[in-house]
Length: 378
Image (cartoon, rainbow, N blue to C red; front, top):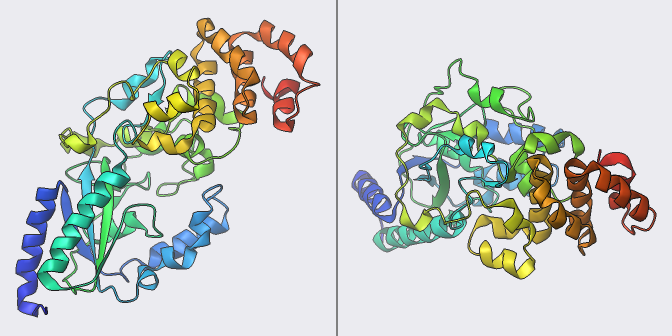
C-alpha cells in the first residue's frame, strides 16, 4: 500500500486521534537527524564519566547519539507523551520520617509495559493503514527520547534536564515510533524556563553542576535506583527517607500548575506503595519483596539494593523502635545489606553500634562491611 503526499496530513490527524484514544497525552513528529547537538553532549557526558554504573550509555553510544544510525530506513520519528501527574505533593511525604518515599513514577504499574503496549497498538494501526515499517521504543533502547520529544514540539528540556510540557509540567512518560513514512516535522518548542532555578536549588545533593547539566553520581534518583554498590557516606543524610528515586526537582517546576492529575487507570497509584512504613520494608525477605512490588519499577531493583535504601532511610528516621529490625539485618546474606545496616545502627543506637563493632569488625568476611565497622559508618 502506498500513501501519497496529499494523504499525509489526514493520516497524521487520524494518528493523533488514535493516540488520544490509546491514552497518550500528546503527539509530535520529528526527523531522525533532528538532534545532532545531543549526540555531542552525550559524548561529553560519557567522557566525564558521569554515566557511572549506567554502562549502557557508553556501550551503544553511536546508536544513541544518532537515531539515523539506529535504523537507517527510518524517515520520521513519532514522539508521544503520557501524563502521570500525581494527585499529591511529593515533597510533603519527606516529612513522614517513619515511612519511606517511592518516586511518583514507580508507585504504580511499570510504565515500560503500559506505554509499550499502547505504542504497539498504535503502530499496528499505522502499518495496517499504510503498509509502512515501524519500530517502537520505550526507554530501554538506545534512543534519546527527551531531545527527540523536544525536537517534536512536545516540550523543552528544562534546567533539570527532563522534558517540561506546557500541559503536563514535568510529569511525562515518553515513547517513540520510528517509521519509514515521511511526515512533515513539527516545530520545536521554545525553552520557557526563563530565570527560574527552583529545580536546581532544591536538589539536596547538588547534582546540577550548571543549568541543563546533571551529574548522576550525585543524584538521589541515580543513587537509589541505578547505583550498584554501597551509597557514599556524603549522600546518606541528604537522601532522607527516599527509598526509590527522587521527585524534588520535578515537583517544584512552576509548569506543573497546568498539569491535571492523571486519571489513567492503567497507571493508577498502587495502595501502600507510595510511602510504605519503614518497619514493614525492613522485614521483607526476597519472596515478600517480589510480591509487594510485582509489576512495578521497584521490583527491578532487587531486594538487596532496595533494603540498602530502606536502611539509609531508617538511619535517618531517628526512630529507635527500628533498632531491632536493623540489628537483625547485620547477619543478612547480602554484604550490601549488612554494610547498610551497620550505618543505620550507628545512627539509631551509637552505644549499640560500638558494642557490635567490638564483637564483629575483625570477623566480618566482606571488606566493605569491615570498612563500615571500622569507622566509615560514623
